[in-house]
Image (cartoon, rainbow, N blue to C red; front, side, top):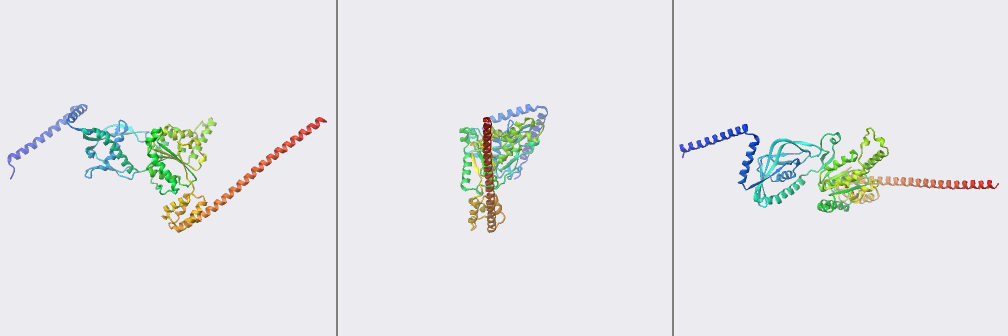
Length: 510
């Protein structure tokens, strides 16, 4: 029943031998670290691993975070791909909440492993991180570098007979799934120019906030047919990458939104971004100093983005006036003058929209807005630069019904007919209608207030129209009187000349 003395002695001997061997190994390791050069130790270790691997059927692919000094996109794809397949029984996980993000980011802790199955084949992922000598890699803003002293990489291991399948099919599967995960987790951003760009400090040229604008095509106060046309055009654009490549065009599309203020141009841009899941870059041309700066900003924008230039007529007019004044008076350039530093020109803008620099990036949409389309240079309006012109007009009966549904939660009311009749004869913007509907949550009160506003607006429009007609009549009468006076003056001059000539002939005869 009880262990024999010989068995206990044997166990003690084994434990003693193991302890002695461990101590010997530790001693040898200490001696090796003290007397054998690091390079020689690494060489021996490498040869030993190579010898062991020669007897193994396992193949390992190493996916580094950086390829030389460039970001390895396959490493990022692996990070995204592994997040949803982390086993629930994993003991250690690394989580974080990136700045200005809403979603928690989850990743593997150092030396953690995951087994994945693809087409019946098991592959093993392992994340490894090591401290190494500091090196400098390009910063995401493209204008500076950042120090990195950590070597991070994934090891992807599998049986070597599946090498072709992994390289040809599995890696493509990882990239595809990572893009889908990225799109699902993506938080839309609204970018504006960074102050660091102007002060000379190193940093990103753009600074961002989360784009939480709630506008969608379902809530826009536009004609249904017009919304459908825009949505179909956007869907067709994002699906035609190979078509653009085949015909030799940059994968971009330009939109011009024109119409009076308050007609929903900004809301339409937000709806486009939410529909496509694209970030927005708000570019203020009057903040730029050179065409070169414009190009740098262009190449620092991301793919799948909407670049917005609002009130383009004001920006271009300003630049052209200054450029023209500089050309006419070169001496005025001497000395410092902030206005003299503005050198973004129409030609620079056209090259940015449709020139060589417009191909720096894929899946880009450029949107210009203006209240006065007639002020724009025809060169900017042609297809290839502004491919689609969208007129943002005054509120229509269809737009009113959409606003009533959004703000009051109703699709019918007895007062609708009266409101629609007034809207059909009055120039009122969707913003003005929305402001009236926001004044009360009771449909009766809100609609009656809107009717009063529309009737007052109609009277004001009629009075303004009468004043304009009266001014036009007076101007026309003034022009006619001026023309009549000029004609009378010409006739009087002719009569006077004829009289002088006649008097001269009489004197000659005398």
